[in-house]
Length: 280
Image (tube, rainbow, N blue to C red; front, side):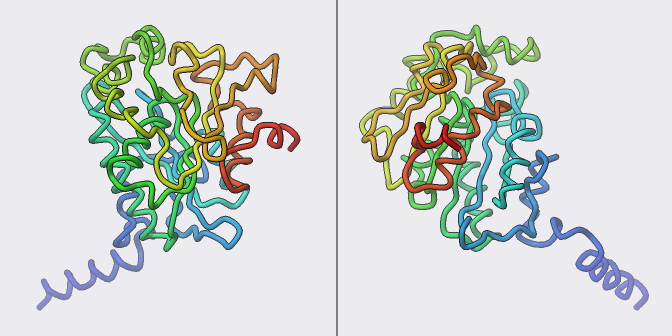
């Protein structure tokens, strides 16, 4: 009897005492590790004017806690429910696994966020691989039904011509030949050929690409651009609007001038309108 009373006590304590994140349906947030400021708050509920939770997806060798250190609290301050994921963890580092499998992880994460918040759709913001990988989810895993915006900072949509830039962000922490996602992001890879065959912008999704001429990773920088109708796709080069902004591949996600295009896309129907965005 004492044994069962103790078990009942533990069960009650687990439900009432432990933080909300530990309750059923919210454990997936804990699995992401330390989030960036303002993200992964299970209690956040979408509002009428901001109905879509915002999902943040980091780039190769990155984790969300660092990748979205600046943008995440800015989004939260504006009233968005922000959820930051990590994916593709291998011995080569975070976000280095098979991109198709990472897209499946994104699929599961989106499903969990929708269930947690009761929302119908999400907006996705990604950096580098994190801006390209969601396109596999949209095109092949049915994600286009659940996403309103894909906003991508310097995405590797059509690949890069070499490992040089990836070596810079990796800092020698792992052998790049063991990074499958790196190989899949090379120009002409089998993965990218499959991804870009046919319609590059499927579904009723708005696509915003934010690029920089000084990109040291996605080379050439125009490799980030997507083919699609103007009403659905906005390919933006930051120097066309902020002439003296020389921000690079890594720094762009901390650049507040770049954020103007993000907020414009989130606040209006369709992709970002850069002329409107810079007047904010």
